Amino acid sequence: MNRATAAGIVRGGAFAAVGIAFPFVVHAAWIVNIGVLTVMYAALATAWNLFSGYTGYISLGQVAFFGLGAYSLGIAFEHFGIGSGYNPFWALPLVGLGVALASLPIAWIALRTRHMTFAIVTLTLLFIVQQLAFNLRSLTHGSSGLMLPTPSFAIDNYDRPFYLAMLALLLLALGLCRLVLRSKLGLMLLAIREDEEKARGLGVRVTTAKLIAWWLSIAVTAMVGGVWAYYLTFIYPEFAVDPLVMIGAVLMTFLGGRGTLWGPAIGAIVLVPAQQYMLTRLGASQLYLVGYAAVFIVVLLLLPRGILPSLQDALARSRERQRTRRNRIARREAAV
Amino acid sequence: MTALLEVLGLTKRFGGVTAVDACSFDVPAGTITALVGPNGSGKTTAFNLITGYTRPDAGSIRFADAPVSRPDPTRLARSGLTRTFQQARTFADLTLVQNLVAALQQPWRAAFRRAVRPPEAARARELLEEFGLAALAQERAGNLSYGQKKLLEFATVLMGEPRLVLLDEPTAGVNPVLVEQIEERIRDLNARGLTFLVVEHNMNLVMRLCDPVVVLDHGMKLAEGRPDEVRSDPRVLDAYLGG
Image 1 (cartoon, each protein chain N blue to C red):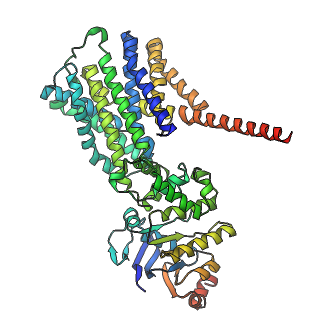
Image 2: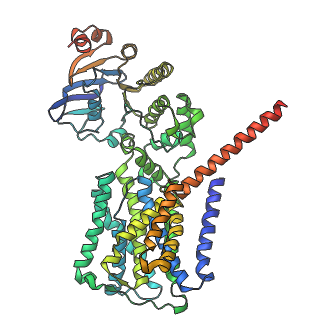
Image 3: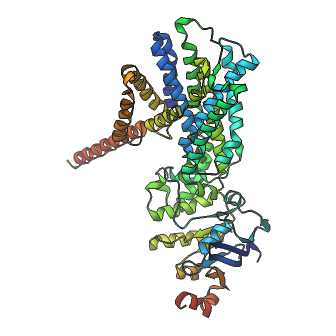
């Protein structure tokens, strides 16, 4: 095992430990609630990055599959009786696999387009799913919403199981990203992002590579949607497929650093609590949106490539400066 | 000599312009075949048609004695036909070693193996050594000079162990020392059995290096033959100098 691998495991372990400890140390429900939202957005952004960050294909339709995951779990409750308490969580992998599988033919068609066109095509998916949720009343109950059974968790730590489920999904997303980034698949995806035509000319099977990344990304996204539905116990088309959730996840990824492992999670950890704080302090006046926007303007001005890449650049520059200074001193001493 | 690549009546129209017009020629196995012609004569379009980047309006190609029904860059590359681009194209954010290893054709079961495995890195370094880029192995490709990018691109296409390499202006915009190096590489690889089809404007180089030479003009094949034959062909002289 080399040093980079060891450092990665230590970092991941420390992150997981702090993440798991959080709801056991902090008991205030409103803080754990912010924790659930933060970890949820971190998982969504990380999953989004797994496809869009590594391939360069900006998908604006990811939240359609978040909504499909939410409705899948809700419908499963209604029709198949998947139990209560912790049991519904065990249905999640099935929701993830199923939604991701169903999304593959759609992705295959959408991936025939690129750049702006791909972004717009995927954006329409979001509205299609929302319209379906409104109109397939026998399944979704349309605009009157779908009710899920209230989970039977103790009221004192009601948020904790949801927080831990979201955290598990975030860790899964991070693990998948790390696996992909270090694998041949990751190399293919980066080659596609850099110059897809060139990659094709070298024999890279670009479509299949993109579909694998898409599949992994959607599977996580749908599972996050499922947990969210169970958490709210009530889902409406407007909230299950919400463009603002999509935009939030994308902005967090850009904020933290697109194409990096930790960037999207960092973006979420910075942004979601800031957003929630401003919402509670300034919510009545809608001024919180101004504050939210200000965070972006500041970050884009100071760290245009995102938090993580900009910090890495700064670190590399300072190391370089130190090295040249050391060399200069060494040369001077040698001369003396 | 058997033909490794046969081009049969290839035609491509862009609106009213016929870029490649019923073009037929062979690339015999083991040769360095040149494809020359004035600017706009359809050389690059012919390359795009042969490698599957553009779909022809008519005509077909045969590669290694098999018809290629719908040319597709990925499939062709995996069956041994690959190309470089006129403007050197590399993966700017990847290191040189990663650039080369990305060009190794992998079966799907390898998708989740380590990105760069030690034997693959060793093979990449060997090639970089041959191309005089070994010192830059861990550099980002985006930091290379234009000439170095050309060398890198050339090295990259060799990773897939092709049988036929199409080089689109391998020496354009490259300093004389690098031209010599590239020429030497082509000769050396050709001696080891690799076949080339080269688009090139440097006529001295073409005359030294290539045989046969195919001349295109206005998308049509004007002449084909040994370099000295082609050079003294009045139609060729006319296309280049007069008209």
